[in-house]
Image 1 (cartoon, rainbow, N blue to C red):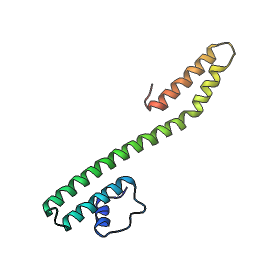
Image 2 (image 1 turned 90 degrees about the vertical axis):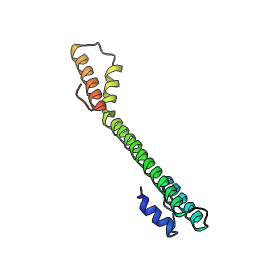
Image 3 (image 1 turned 60 degrees about the vertical axis):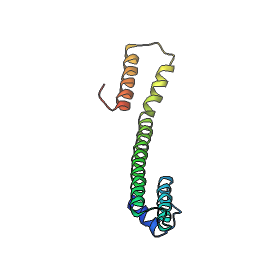
Image 4 (image 1 turned 135 degrees about the vertical axis):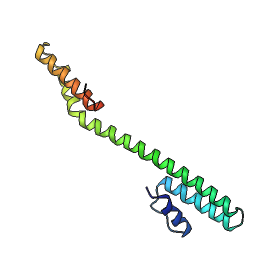
Length: 124
């Protein structure tokens, strides 16, 4: 994500926005509209600055939210990849039609505990 200062600079200089993400484009268009209203004497300098500050704060809040959700998603995908082999082995053990022995039960419980510890990243 671009810094809000860069987006404001681009909006002021009328730079092209072909590769902007949706959040960046929203701030860019908001700043462009504020500048247009200011230059048409529809807003005072103080009002324009106030609206710009609101827009920048909103942008930065949404960027933090986006980054947090993106990180959560990446962690979830990593967790699935890390435990996939263990889950496959557990399914094989549970579908096995062999009689339950102490050894098989111990291996199954160990697989379950390993999956839980990798999923929750804490000792179990």
